Image 1 (cartoon, one colour):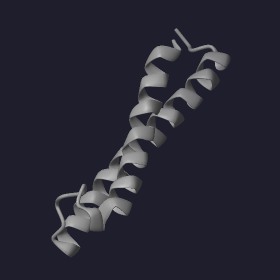
Image 2 (tube, helix red, strand yellow; image 1 turned 135 degrees about the horizontal axis):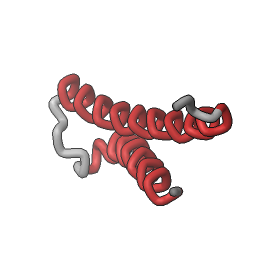
Image 3 (spheres, rainbow, N blue to C red; image 1 turned 180 degrees about the horizontal axis):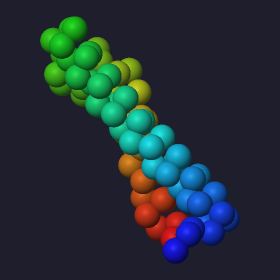
Length: 74
């Protein structure tokens, strides 16, 4: 049975949103990991590294929120 053309087109934005959300999560974790390796700063809540924590939390939080929106969009 062939897929309807409109069904295939409607599924594309959902997959794009999912991959973008996953990319945000991976970028946030990669930034935390690389910052920790470069500067030996594994405690993101230390006062000197709050900027890194702010960026990482926004990236990961946006990615998780995007995945939750996709899940409950149906």
